[in-house]
Image 1 (cartoon, chains in turn purple, blue):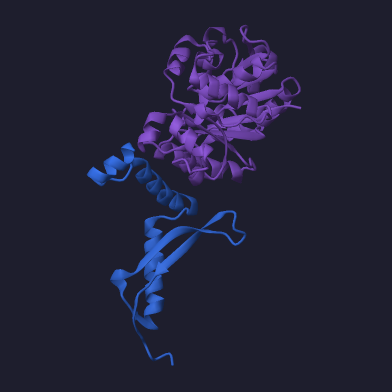
Image 2: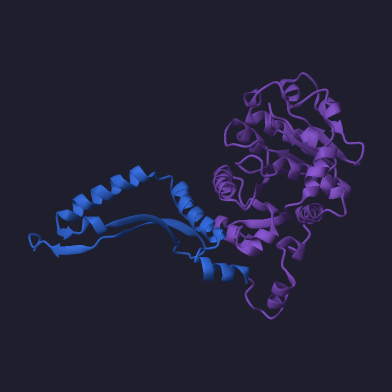
Length: 266
Length: 94
């Protein structure tokens, strides 16, 4: 039985593609068979983030139009056993694929894979509708900014209206120095506003830029804080009960002591 | 600590609290799918109806969309809250 998870956000540039690449790689490293689908037709990027851009022959549009078989379009990532990418088309637009075609494709892929991770484009139009059509679960990516949280709220509403209940929230690019100064919303603030379950918190980490430069997901970097956060998120996706760690919340020693004595951490 | 000092000297709210308050307000409107113009229409209709029965202070009238706990207590639902100061109740209704 396979799980189809869509990674979405509403707002662009919050880390959907980075999240897809890292979670996908993490699941493969855990021995799962994983396929990543880039549904951002016309603005594909998952291929470059994964470092697989030179290996594209066929794409998502070729598959749904029947130009090739699904297996011909899947790019096998030679670095990580069990990891595959189905790239988006670059020279077409979102209307080249219909939601029904995505449902059919996801059904076909579920026979073969443990996890199907769908990278959703920004926005709430056709591309979003395509991306969520075949999904059974959703992860909403946001950052601690008013614009991203507002869009996340809208997306959560749309997901629930489309029978994708109980989406999980991933708060990305948190700067704990700013949170401590009171200049960035903290995790509780955002959860309070959006009223959804948290799947993880990823700190702002320059290693993400470096790993994207190289086309190697940060989750493989044992020294990367963001990588560590993504490793935890991957384990939570697989059903493990991993507490949101101190690294995640960025608690300083002082707050840890306060928590120890049952005082409210601010 | 830093936060307290800046409050002491600058008397400015932490920017994250400003963000949170602004977000809460904007989301009330987003979620209810209600525009300020729509709210103005509701407001003027309410004034019209109530004015038939009592004199109200239109300047101090305040109508807002906000959130309130639902009856089962575990979710928030939008609510229309109106604060309408009454100057005088007309006697014609008696």
